[in-house]
Image (tube, rainbow, N blue to C red; front, side, top):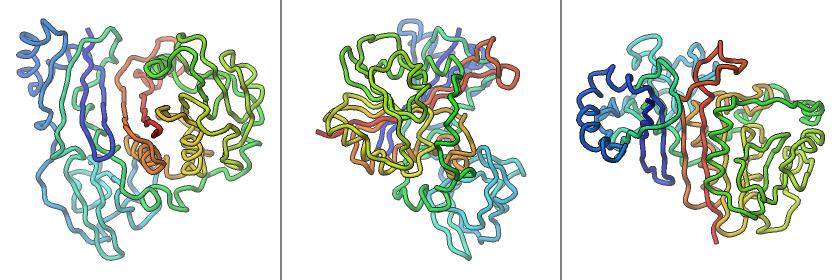
Length: 389
């Protein structure tokens, strides 16, 4: 039996749900969970198939004073964060860095616990070393699920990341600096996307999770835009009568997509204006592509323009992308911080009712070509908001 453990919490601008699928045995392997979960299973779960706990005890460290350290204690140039090395000497206020980047704060050379830089000058830093959710009320729920969990996933992994997606106050200074918007491959996108790629970039389980998420919002007969589309739109089987427009970079890929009723080839990095009138769509979907936009602020504003009042913009991504074509800041951020960037885009564009959702720990299909590299399915990160009336 698999158990879905979920952290449910609220930041200043959005509601959040972070889910981890674990095997039933994982709840009993750690003494911190054994007592609480055993009691809950005997009471609530037997009747409701779900249980709930206050998550405060597991959001540690908490209550620690803000650290003030000299800038010389920051050594990120030799520290791995997420998937890349950074070559900056002064950290960006609002961003998270592993404790191992701060000589005086790390408990070991591999201390990857996140610390958020609050202020940075050429002489000193103010750093918050508490858990990103410390002091923030959060509910921990457990529910039985039919999916199969990846073996070896531990409950402690649930708390690694949540809290970091709370969007920073300033997108421009925290995420979208000129350096952060550079790319390894600055050549025209038309060259890179000239040849069609009829291949899936995410595994089947992750694609199914994306389709299930989209299915929660889509209704029969709706007019929907698949933004930065390709040969597959990651939609659920139903509803089948969607009026689906697709905007992408390669005509052959769009032509191969059987769900599309309208196809537009356009490079949003050359022209961010969408070729539709205002209030045209009930929903806009962007799957595994937001990281390639050189002006995501302009594109998000265009999405709001073409959405009907009450329409929803849903952005999904995982931890796979073309590294040479993604904006540099994307690879520098922790995966959960990337959600903060997307939520900030939605917030600043005027979207309301903001949400984020993550799903991790599902088992990778046995026939997947990357099964020897990772046993778990590609994680799902999603953010959405509603166009105001």
